[in-house]
Image (cartoon, rainbow, N blue to C red; front, side, top):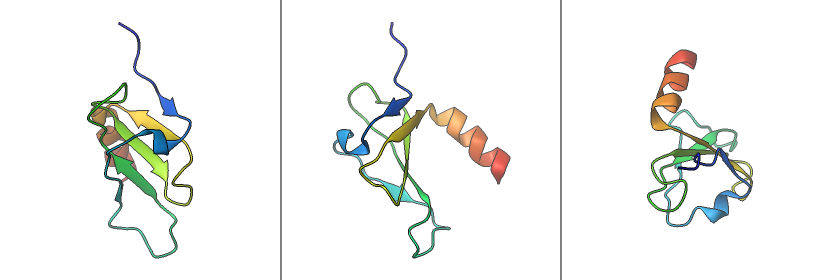
Length: 74
């Protein structure tokens, strides 16, 4: 079984996802957005992108790894 991808060159490749912005975000558009793809090679992973570059790359994480990261920086 191949390893899941870790990045996507353009987050626009993730179709039918709803990007969520942090509730801590300001109007300056300087935060990250997350989405949970349900289909394709990224299904089951958490996608993270820069809100300033919505068509830029996205990083992909297993949900438990992202939760550990958020807990660590919180």
